[in-house]
Image (cartoon, rainbow, N blue to C red; front, side):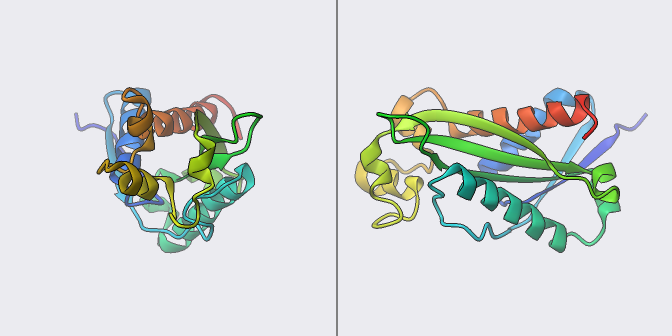
Amino acid sequence: MPKKIIKIALATTSEIKQKAVQEVFQEIFAGKEIQIHGIKTDSKVSDQPLSFEETFQGAKNRLDNLLQQTQSVKDYDYFISIEGGGAHILEPYKYFHITVVLILDKSMMRNKRNPVPGLAFGIAFPNHWFNKMPKPYPDMGTLIKEEYGIDVRDPYQAVTNHLSRKDIIKNAVKNALVQLKTQKF
């Protein structure tokens, strides 16, 4: 008997984000084949959003852009956008990294329902890093590469040597997907 295929339209071509979504869906939908179609989208916010509101707006803009680019709702089971940014949460730590995920499934599209949000908060990054964005650096990945010589666009690895950006993205995806599967939005 062939495996059921779950088709996902993902508002990014980022390999890290695609792997994170793939791993979460394989965990939640064990035994099903997961197919991800990464589509380049524009967040219409700065390269490094510096507030929760801007990060959320970036995810919403990406999802809207994705929906405009996908020809037919019937071609996909899920539509997902992911946006990362910084958010000023509490003193003395200026900025925590946050990830916002928005997920729609096919039935939500037909019924014109709002997407389900998933959030994940990462670690507090040094305040002086955020003072260097958007100038001279457009985003944290570029800052890490230029100032520390680390040729990886994963600030978590640079700071912790343990936690990865993919880990945080997976948490946000799982937070949204579990809500979607267990509640009627």
